[in-house]
Image 1 (tube, rainbow, N blue to C red):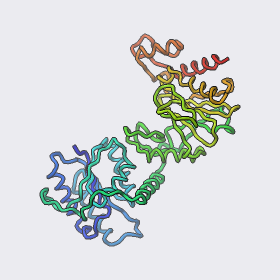
Image 2 (tube, helix red, strand yellow; image 1 turned 180 degrees about the vertical axis):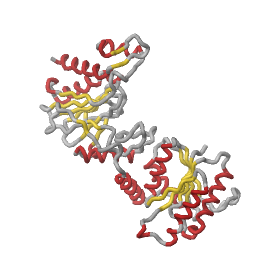
Image 3 (cartoon, rainbow, N blue to C red; image 1 turned 120 degrees about the vertical axis):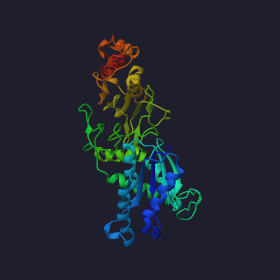
Image 4 (cartoon, rainbow, N blue to C red; image 1 turned 30 degrees about the vertical axis):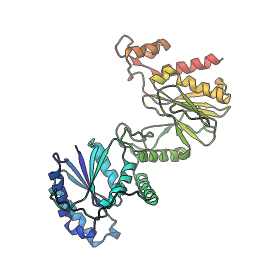
Length: 392
């Protein structure tokens, strides 16, 4: 069932501007007649040119749309100078209402262009269907606005322009939750290694569970790659690295380690390198992001350590890779644990807690309960220390 309808009035023929309310009224009547369950939310997309560029025809469009909006419950008119700006504003509204099944009604010549915008601003979480904008209200006698067109590939230069338009809009957005913050450790020498841990501030991701400096995109989430790329650009500017040379682990919650310059595994939770000018990273939240630095050999590493990775020894595997691949001495390797969940707030089933209890009884609180509290930070420190001792 369609949850929301988008009516695209960008590039609407000038001859229809004077009767814009009639166009919308006919379109809404068609939706109601042809749908057994009309969508409760309707969003009208229109272009709002700067004052200096407006023409008489365009000036008359906005009052008519505002008047129509006041007469139709559930309808909202969204105007901006670019399609990217309007569509992203509507996306924020859809996300706030948790809507995913969308019908887009638009002039036929705009369909393929609209698909490019949607591919860049939305993910597979959303389902879109397209319908030509009509002027008749009879379902059996619909008249398309504009010439009928078969599906065509959008020219490469047009795709590039759309990407640029989206990028410019995202770059113009204010940072959320404050300025971008990078936490550093005094253990790692700044003159050798540029390093740090991000927080949730300074990005543009507005999804509550991801905001704001989300650096990971997934087809199963609402935060698109374009937004993640903008977050990374802002982080790179603040931290001083090249975002084109950014490499993040392909998390599998296991203990595989990627050695940069060698064949990349399909998935891995640790990464090590001695290459200059590259940036490596591992995600964290509940899980622990780990940084490894050998200032003698000038080798660094990053790892993602959740409870599974902790038990599987991802920290040990990362140290082993630094030793075997680059000849590091474990006595020279500095290991820093980033922000993560604390023992006050992290529970696991009893059978999993038993494995942490075997590492160190102090890693488990309320051991006799069905879901004990786990201190994965303590377990990681214990395992990492044990790894170093085993090499001595």
